[in-house]
Length: 114
Length: 113
Image (cartoon, rainbow over all chains, first blue to last red; front, side, top):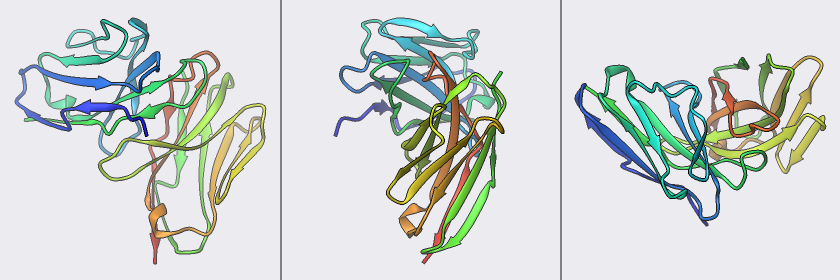
């Protein structure tokens, strides 16, 4: 069964350092999402891509977060510099279409900022 | 913007009993309501969804009901099994931006054998 791949699964870093997360969506899925899930809460959308274009990044803290999907396939989410409040699970999801259809989530990247 | 409230935050049932989780939403333009199951250390997995043109949907032991007038929807799990133990999230989104899901805070379901 096709899956959304994410790496690393776990990342521990000190505040002010840079971190990056990688996501490879299910083949053929044009829409890719990055969500952030703080412990004990539901996921919140950070950014949505349709192919290589950003559709929605209204919730992305652009002073320290950046995301790209250069070739419209895999994607990278970067945080620089990391802050204590960034500790969370970063989930990538993909769907065949952004208007309809199921979102398939990866297993996430757990970030701890010390 | 949309706000989704979910209750209860924790639910403990005996194996074989039914479990009900309820959610309310605020945005009348929302028209897609999925439910996700998240097991420890894993990403959320869609278990059932419903659109605003339908009042009820069932898939084996799982059913979802939607009341558009009252802006609430519920998840019903019958004949619960220990493997149903997980955190369940409801979510809502608008037409044309189905991937921009607004999630509730989750319900931790424990099914005791």
